[in-house]
View 1: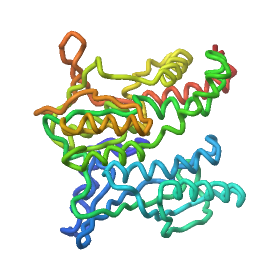
View 2: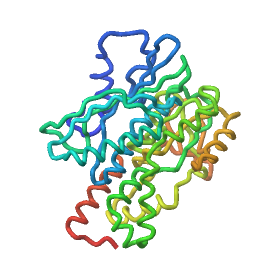
View 3: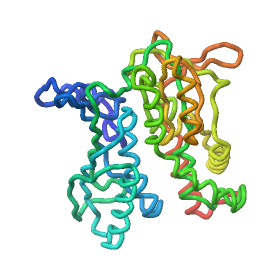
View 4: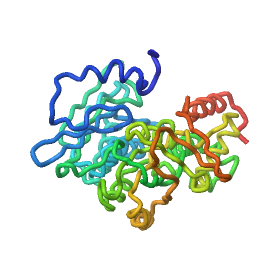
Amino acid sequence: MRSNVLGKVSRDVFNKVIYPNLGVKDSSVVVGPKFGVDFSVIELGDKDLIIEVDPVFVVPEYGWERSSWFAIHILASDVSVSGVPPKYLFIDLNLPSSMSDEELKVLWEGMHKACSDLGITIAGGHTGRYEGVGYPMLGGATMIGVTQRGNYVTPEMASAGDKVVMTKGPAVETAGILATLFPEVLERKYGRGFAREAQKIFWLQSVVKDALTLAKTGLRNGVTAMHDATEYGVWGALHDLSEASNVGVIVDEGSLFIREDVRKVVEAFSQLTGVKIDPYASISEGTLVATVKPPRVKKALSLLHEAGIEAAVIGEIVEGSGVYLRRFGGSEERIRVPERDPFWEVFFRTLNILKEGGEVD
């Protein structure tokens, strides 16, 4: 097993350390901890609770308004991919001693607004300042959705014949963060107007609207599985779906799309840092990949487009395993699980270049 690797533990560590040691078994836990599945499901009478747990992720450099919005939408997105709207939030804020009461007030009021906009009640929690605490991980939170028994989907429910739908295109989070934190790079390459507009990509980093819109096609008989493309991007999300549902995924090269503003941001930072960025392997909170029954695909795309969400069918689910890219000529190329997410190398190289006064033209 690997050790001391930052980020989520590897599949190997999860399977050998976490999964075999889950306390007392309980039949009411119908979806428990699983690698690649972002929530659990507990049966209570004729209801199901959709429950997810994550760090409270706060980056002051985004600005407090953006930080509070992003922190809530990360949590809400992981419930929403079940097809169930998030309802209750329990939050533990472990604050650094350097954070002032005024900063906490702005952050908390922003979180309250984000929750209010999504129909979420903050039902409990804990708040305190402690030594040894630092950004961006300020404690943890539990988000809960409530639904009728069996009225949800998981990444394990895709089946052969389903169509694969992608929203927004790849690298949304990569472009949103880079454009927000390093606007000078874009300003020198494309001008002040583009740099200002590109910062709006930040607000696309949520799949709440995407997932709940797709849920209107019907859960299980319409949309069968949903997953957001976080670390390792679209390729990572498709591999998670493939492994969770024990199916193969074929993606059509000609059906893939990327937003023009995202493409330009990725191109600018790739040129600056010398890092070749595969946008489909880049972190992309806000991009939803979903599987939909063929008879409901037209309705699914119509609902998404009416909601102002760009989306397209990019492939299909087949028998087998793994993720494959069908090239324009008809040949198929196996897409491996990305070994690294290029965002992090680009991010830290950009920091060093700007710190040293490097050229950003």
